[in-house]
Length: 138
Length: 300
Ligand code: SF4
Image 1 (cartoon, each protein chain N blue to C red):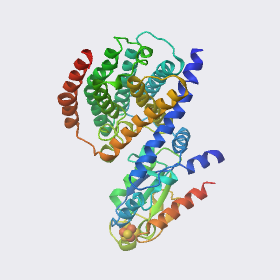
Image 2: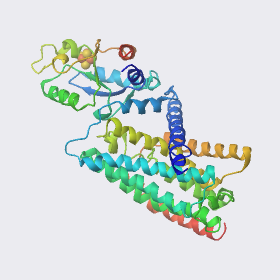
Image 3: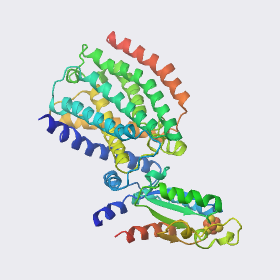
Image 4: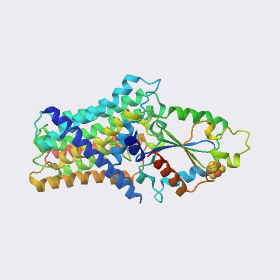
């Protein structure tokens, strides 16, 4: 597994799922692709299809309707797949803590490999988080 | 000997390596256009090896046989394309009518993409597949007429080797045909403005959307090799193959000119809609290509 992980580290394709966020985290994720932060230099790129993904980047508190879809997406993804939760929402619900339609936290639905807390986290924090994930693959 | 030609040089290994590098040049230059840093040079190789280790999923409702063999048909066609073309360019092998063979192989690749996409039982893939077929119908006619220009210039030889001695680019019709050819190659490589079948931002990867793991890796290999062989085909078609070391240098320069023109065109254009693309190819480029061909027949 050692060599494979070293290769996987250099080419993580990210699929972005928004599971009922307030949308701030998603905007910050889009910032990652702008020239200022440029994730492609680490080989990380956003893909449009779950079948191509290595990382599921999930934002939001996990509303009851979207939760089924999150589980379905997780099952549809080719393994190995890593789940990264962005923002405070998937951990504790943030603003939506007491919402009647909350089925989170995320780790009740699918196994999470990494949390990047913050409301919303800065793009720098997200890059640091993703690089930690890379470090953990060693 | 055939096995060596096909597997090592100038077939699989050689053109794959060059193709991955050419694809990297495309990604890197696009990144520079957008004031980004861009991926390191080995990125495409790493992507490919990563895909080899992922799970390959065959969707339940797909036509599973077609779904699995379509990427292999495309890959086999591009390898034979690279072998025949590379044989004529680097080794001076003589095959009667290899020009026609190459035209057929290039449309076979598009057909395989269409088949694979329509076998995968996905709406987006179906949209991508129909667009791929329409693009094939629109660019093929222009491309054939463009290819006929150097053929007419060299006294109707359908051997690639026969075209190399008197380059067509030296005449007026040759220059116009080269520009038309660039547009056709742009469409065949599915780069903007003609990236309709893939259209990442619109139909999420279109034709490749359901593919994963090894099968996706084979599509990526095909795409990488296309980045090498199509520009090479166009550049040797019009510029010929020069002799000696300085000639080789000129050839490499002309290849890179072709590649960079394609990349620049990709980066300064937005995606067009399919009917605009059909109109553009059928109503503007086809008559233009016909006129150019007639001029070439009269020696202009
Ligand atoms: S963590 Fe904060 S910013 Fe992010 S989606 Fe939740 S509420 Fe919005």
